[in-house]
Image: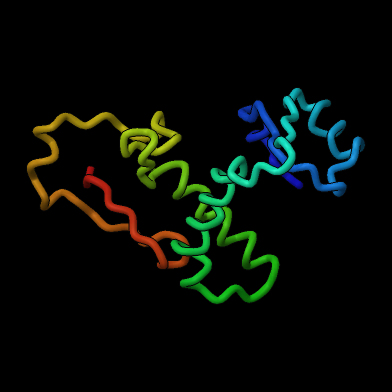
Length: 134
């Protein structure tokens, strides 16, 4: 596991009651200041958010690309994570990405000129991002 600087932005670790999650596993994350939340027994809907992210990964990425090896998978997932947090609209965030600070603010009058829109292929060309030209 290599979260690097991103671990500072995390506050919680949510997992089910699988015996794989030992006390040593929990101590690693507790030492980083994360609050461990264990799901309640016999409540399958508590994992809905994780399942939705996994489903999104499958439909938008993994069903559309042939993964060659572990290194290739790590590279593709890293690129997709950048796209997912920096550009992809999220319904729960009013169609804005999580890293909203990375995007410049646009006035409504700036959106009228469609000639200024540029396409940028990302994640090995599987996904396209659209941006206003400078």
